[in-house]
Each structure stands twice: as structure tokens, then as C-alpha cells.
Image (cartoon, rainbow, N blue to C red; front, side):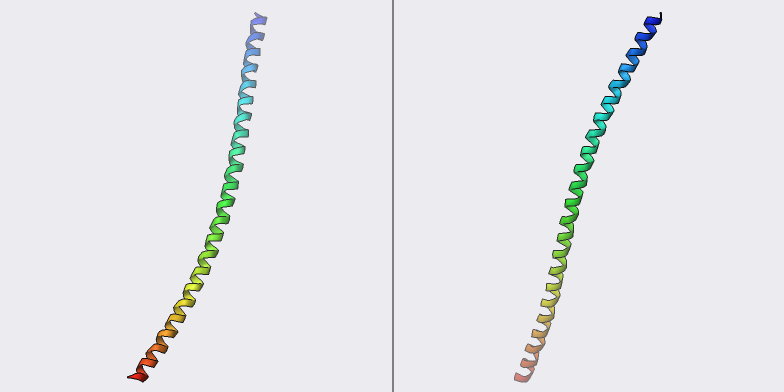
Length: 84
């Protein structure tokens, strides 16, 4: 009877150890995934930052060109007014 209980205890402990090892493997896999996702997020963040910088440059260039276009239009209108 004691031997049966010891065998049952050994089996239960063995199952617990297997479950613990399985949980450790799962944890390691999750940590690996988390690290990969963090790296991807960092790369995406840098990409978004670079795109935002490029957008700001394009907007500044667009504003400059619009101002230049307005100045040219005003000059042309003045010239046309003097010609008429």
C-alpha cells in the first residue's frame, strides 16, 4: 500500500516536472516573440519618424512653392496691368 502511494506520488511529481518544463519552454518562446515584436515596433517607429520628417520637408517645400507662385502671379498681374 505504501509502495502504491509512493508510486502515485512519483507519477504526480513527474507530471508536475513535465508541466513545469513545458511552461518554461512556452515562456522562452513568448519572451522570444516579445523581443522580436519589440524590435519590429522599434523599426516601425523609426520608419514612421523618418516618414514624418520627409512629410514635414515636403510641406515646407510646398509652402515655399505656393508663396513663390503667388509672388509670380502678382508680378505677372502688375505687368499685364501696365501693358493694358
